[in-house]
Image (cartoon, rainbow, N blue to C red; front, side, top):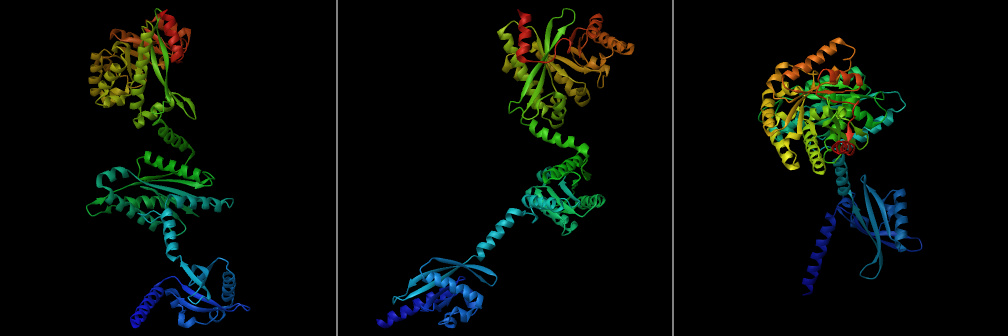
Length: 563
């Protein structure tokens, strides 16, 4: 029985001994041989790292730190052991094989009651490796292995700080793959990512070690080129465009791409990282406006482009944020001076820029397609307002609303008008839709069909700004117009220029013979009004009679006439 216990005990010891030997950490014991002289000796030393250094229990038993280690390190350990022997908690650093270990020392007693120090090291190698990996992941793109936006921002800041005051230039380059979203939709995610990785690899071969190359977003790369002239930067951009244009072979097919490159120069184009980056992006968008597959250096005239991009983003949310509102410009009958209608004109209460007029954002809205949503809002708001006025008092004035030619490319254009009239309760006869001449060029046949359907509903149709566009006379005969609005430019010199007078009289006479009601816009003087009255113009609108006014003021005008 005793033999079995001894055997079992030895097996347990061997088991724990084997475990200690396999530990990457270090475990050791220290005793104080002579308290007066504070002589410490080792009684155990185990662990894989210790074993590689020859620090086994057999090798160190009975030896002091001074016998095993260099004097400076031995002295350091001596101080830590003395503190721990006095009962103070000790955790100290231990450098071993260029790795840092944290060693905790604890005062304890063995089985016989003798005091000893137990030292246990915590190996942070794996923790540090994980930390380094995490730090890398934070600053490097997983797909391409290039630095990401965070790393690039830091590098750009360092470049600005390093060159500040030195007079040295650097060029910031933005490289954007043209129509990448279309390609992604066509070939799928995995091939698209393979293409991006291939592009990143090619770009890495173009730049030397002085250049910070990064991937900022899905198809957007950036580079900081130090010690390079503008001509050298242009040559580098040409090389990049040529490189990306070369077909990339995937497993299924060859992918053909192009890229747009925008560049800005420090400190010529700005002294702050954000400013330089913004201007390089502006130049890149300018390259895209030119059709892509080219490069642009930033110039002052591109500021407008950058502002337009910002404005477009803000305009996208204007309807949802209730930032749009209407003004109304009255229309008066020339013969009776009676208020017979009003034109609804949209305004944008921009959070920072204040009230913005259509001339600053309608063209942008048409380019981006946002005009469809804006026009829909204007149409509904105007119809609802007029219906509300009609319910309060006896109002006999129609409302005119501008519709972009883009609506005539939409299959639900007529349905949209029908739905709004039904929702607001306004009779179609009180609504007039104003169209510009561009609708004839863009979608002539479709426009004709839409107009005929609107006419069947009872909606009136006006041609706006007549004379400023194509003015093909056969359109007046072909399309079912009710009203012709003469552009203000025909009125400016009508009282002093015989040629302008002839043109204006001809337009009025022609419209009358086609049974169109004639409205003159931009009437600003009594002389102009008298001239129009003399030549039988039907209606007028302009600053002489009234500027566009808010709905409260328009309401007072309507009800003052009604009463």
